[in-house]
Image (cartoon, rainbow, N blue to C red; front, side, top):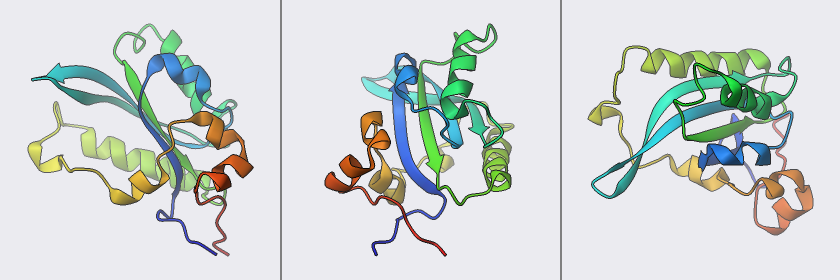
Length: 154
């Protein structure tokens, strides 16, 4: 059986405009990020505005949290794009909470990401990136398109 390149993260959709929130499947558990997109010398840059999470206790998952941020007077105009990081089914809610806490800790005093924090991207995340949410809904389509499908971690 083929192994997943990431232990915690099943699928990733990155840097999508907030108009695509309605494309996110309901009941997804994991971490999400809100960004503000800006142009810097012709290159798109995404400034992290908020890191959040949705666990099993969340009634509508990541999509519900994103919908709430769209309606929030405090946050709705602050972000333009989002990323969603779905966790595997066997990841406990406590682990999701820990991940969110770690990310918030990293950014807690950072007014703008330091050049030391910039990296080209995690190759393993690229391997599970799938911005087409239709592929997330249909397990057969994921297999046909070369996605890793479910994994067995015992």
